[in-house]
Length: 119
Image 1: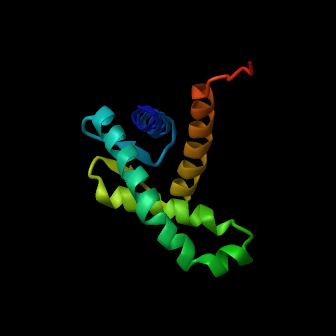
Image 2: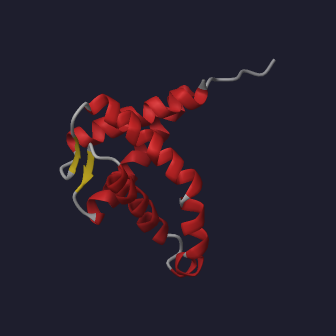
Image 3: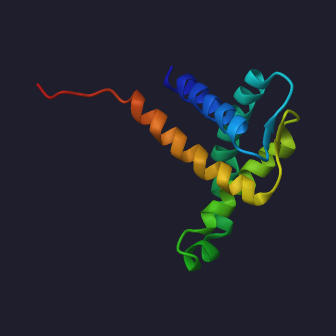
């Protein structure tokens, strides 16, 4: 249940960012495409991102981890190529989209946490 809720929150964040961020567009049935983008990003983050992180480990160390922003942007651009109803105009837009998406996700996921009171 938590996975489905997280995917729906990510889809909501994608929908909000596509509405407000110039250069990111959802076309067709925007609600369905936002869910598809959330699922594709989740799959790419599970399978492709670890491979890219390992292959670019030396440059990531040299840049003190800032190259991970480029890897996130590449994952978003790959999702752009895989999904017909999702479009990102440039790599800089993808970097901004990934930063704002992670901020929105962390905010929304923090609202999901339940306060556990000790006995």
